[in-house]
Image (cartoon, rainbow, N blue to C red; front, side, top):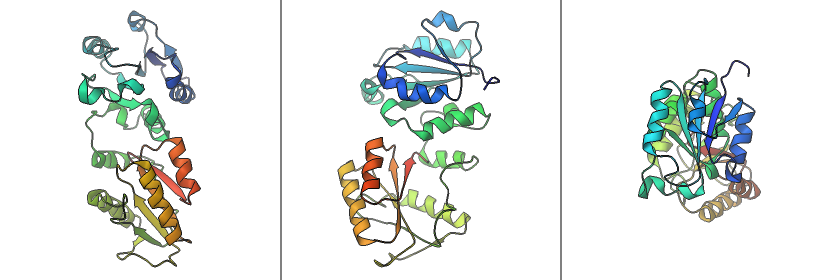
Length: 254
């Protein structure tokens, strides 16, 4: 810990919505809360973390000044609930990795861990990075998405309500399984299936995903059911576990 330069935290860091992320980060690196921009001039930092509670809180000009003054320090935007529509209707800050407070999870914390360990991380990638690029990046890291616990037979669910509708993503999962010599079933198994059933959820409303997961458990009473879902919240994870899902993988991967 002592070899890592502190992280500069700017903006509305004292608001409650930023607290969970800041508490998690404080266990990785010393946090230096900066009340004024001029306070950053002479201090070495590992990351600039901008806690933005509303659109336009930081101007593009001031954001660019940080980049010019500290060209080798990455900039991360931790965005509050009022900023959710900024990328569509406002003028979002450029060249900074964006994390919404309601989507904060272990995936984002691992990106900071990788960065502090000198490994590639999403913190230094462009904000336009795509899912397949994330997979390529994560393939070089010790990702928590592991295939080693899978049973001998795996079926990747296809076209079942909100599950299995992204053919490109399904193809990537199959490729990952093949690399680990995991046997993928080509046909949907019967109700007595005892292997692993992997279901990738699309952007459907969560109640629809939950209902489909419950149907899967009723149909496959003895299977291990694993669900991939976009940035699940705590209550969504709890809901899926309560209807019989065995594991939940958060996307972006993983």
